[in-house]
Amino acid sequence: MRRPLVAGNWKMYGTRHSIDELLSGLNAQQWPEQVDLLIAPPALYIQQCREALGQSPVRLAGQSCAWQAESGALTGEVSPAQLRDAGCEYVLVGHSERRSLFGETDEVVCRKFAAALACGLRPILCVGETQQQRDANETAEVVGRQLQVILERFGVAGLAQGVVAYEPVWAIGTGLTASPEQAQEVHAMIRARLALLDDEQAQRVQIVYGGSVKAENASALFSMPDIDGGLVGGASLNADEFGAIARAAGQVQ
Ligand code: PGA
Image 1 (cartoon, rainbow, N blue to C red):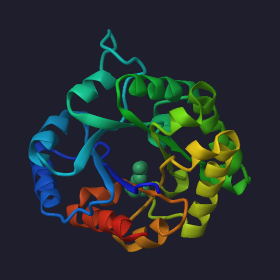
Image 2: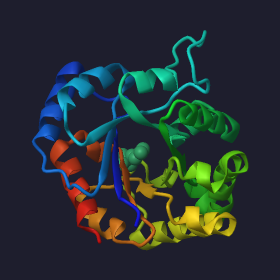
Image 3: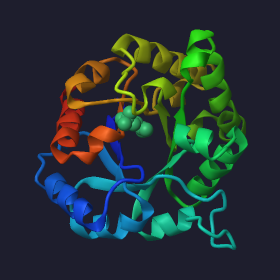
Image 4: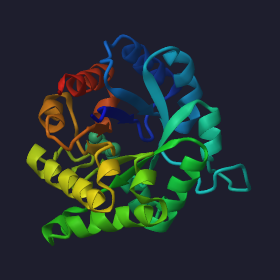
């Protein structure tokens, strides 16, 4: 049985003060035991989060990392080794904002995935199609291509060391959520694709959904058989809302 995972992506939001408040709110939540929980704060505030979370079950993730594992002359970057040193256990790679606004190609995403694994971080590989690609019936092809580079290099067993986040670009930050059926269809397609290569490993891969997940729609999404939790942006900046989403994941059998 796969454990559900609920991750909060704080993006470039927060100040020391607002993050203190958010962390107090998170520390007041009742967390479900059977769910992997994590937040991805801006890198500057990881230390602050680590200190405030203490023994909390909420783990830490980076929002991105350099494509090189160890230190080097890469001004402005944060290495996966540094994220690990700061207490992170996960890192997002290939978020659609990184792909579209910072020009990250599948090859760059693959290098980041490799660098993360090399440092003992679990990479969360984000994949998803734009509205235009969905309208042109290209969802399977686009998502397949985004997975392919990783699969060629690491196989399904390597992918299973990380997490897949299906995030349709048209649903991110727009308030438009994929319906549970639309999301399930893509999740099942991803798992079927992996199963063709290695059925046993494919059943182990956590595939989470992202794109306007809220407390209100979380249960319906998480009750789908191939949706193993969520990657939450906007709603993760509200501790009660994030807590409710986490508990929704804990209630799904
Ligand atoms: P959203 O963002 O929940 O605000 O749509 C999701 C994400 O970008 O990971």
